Length: 265
Length: 261
Image 1 (cartoon, chains in turn purple, cyan):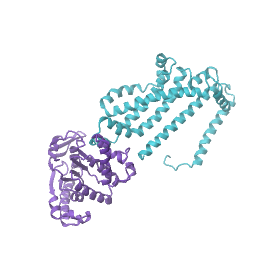
Image 2 (cartoon, chains in turn brown, purple):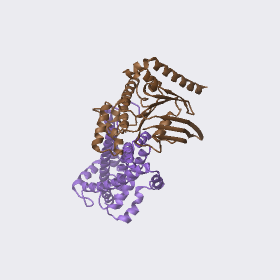
Image 3 (cartoon, helix red, strand yellow):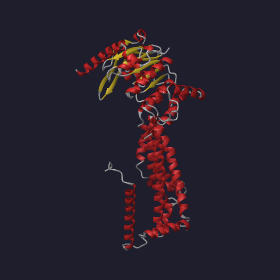
Image 4 (tube, helix red, strand yellow):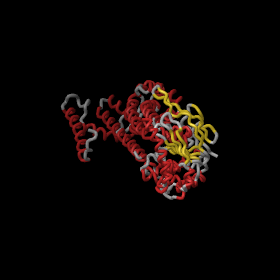
């Protein structure tokens, strides 16, 4: 069982003598092996949610619990995939993936086996000795995902992981992630500003309001995905062609439009 | 002007030689004009002649290359200590705030004292032993190593530290595998400044607290009014300094190439 729970979470920033409420009374439960995506206008505090689950920030009030335990700091039980990859540029692909396993004191034999497994799973064979700057953005993000997955974490936290990729690479990576999520189910909290991506990947989509960030609506995707059997479709374009998909996407778009509109007035 | 097209290699060397020719020309003219006695300003060829002679004919107790070796030994000891202390200390200061608070005010005050100002203590504590020059070189070479390591580590991209912390890195691994490599380009440029300052301070040290070395050779040259000997010492110092700088610049290129900079 690995759940993520936000209980009455409020986060206030202090910025030039002013208190800015980034998040207000957020309540959310991510179930074991559930894939939850958070979308919202920029500055709505969605990344802050993820960073609090990672232990990189603390709530001003309320609690963030992972697996029933209050989060007190970063740890290998919660692997993070960052938007800008945050691969160590001075380490090779292999060494990057190995980094967390060394922290966990995994014995060398087992370590090598696991690294090899994820290198092949993410299609990184032949690049073990390459440095990040020698790889394309898509390949770098594969390394970052392998570095997170290899730790066999309870939960995966992904902060706009495909935001820095070009459109084609993005689609390929989304399909890869779906494949991975099916073969290696995990509890996932996924932050994005791309509605398509959220609907395609997630079991539930959380729509946030603009600052102060609150949960506007939670949309159950899984139910519709199962009913309309999207999973039987191999390609992302086919899923996105489904009227059920289009309907969900339009619904979320409208919610976001309202939030953006609220900002304009 | 920096953005202007690069000079062709041919033009580059033309200008370099032109500079050298002008310098030697002015020097020759001044020496031959008879403004001062030849003892005070020798001609270029007199210096060159003296420089070559010093390799085979002992002066101040040794031939030139023995003086050079004595100097280099002191330099590498002082420079080595500076790196050995400055590099880890810089990393620790960047990582642990209390250590930063403890060291920085003290360091920021002491670093303004010129290395040469330590000569009285070097003489009192070590006499003409090796400790004196080493202390002075250390005082010259230490601040740039410390400052560049500290700054390089302090301004490391926070993303790397956050990634490392989510990957469960200990203090030790954070310092040795994140801060150190992240700061490496800055550290190497610190080493370059440090080697330059250390090598400069060495001559000052040897002028007073040594009985061998290039600086000693020069001060003895002055005592026997052999300005050609003094200038030979200057040439040796300049050449070795240049070689040191080229070596560290190579290191810098290797580090940056590996990082894809």
